Length: 140
Image 1 (cartoon, rainbow, N blue to C red):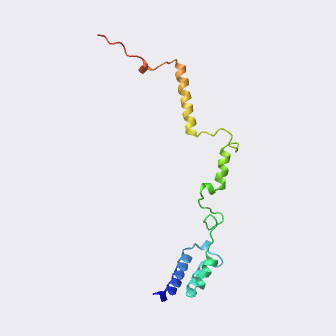
Image 2 (cartoon, rainbow, N blue to C red):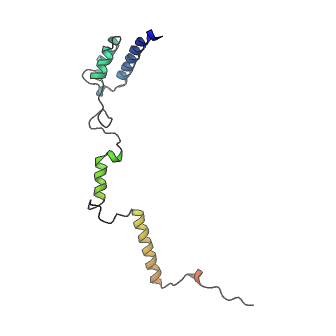
Image 3 (tube, rainbow, N blue to C red):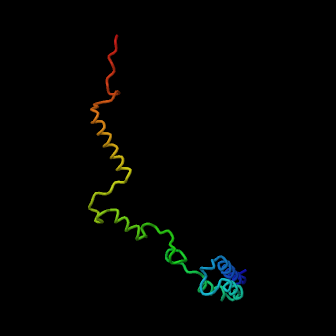
């Protein structure tokens, strides 16, 4: 079994390079047309020259964000995204952190509703609602 291992490894690399070459979009293949890369991988696969050439030269390179194009960006964690961190500093206002923290919209609207409720109650002159009046004395 061990004497077949080098042959199986070469075969696995050859098949992987061939399938990778076929699945790569035509626009992303580098240096040569895709058809030429398929032929090179097939013809020189047994000596690993074709697959190694494909992986080194023909295969599209990945950017730091995991994409294959320079203008295409993938999702980045918020703490690694400088634009997101910059937007947090801008939302803070002064940027020094010395000011009062900004309330979320829901909390602001709740405060406004409570204030409006208090004003309406005072404006009507209510001291208590109908449920606050004591029941009439019971006749016995």
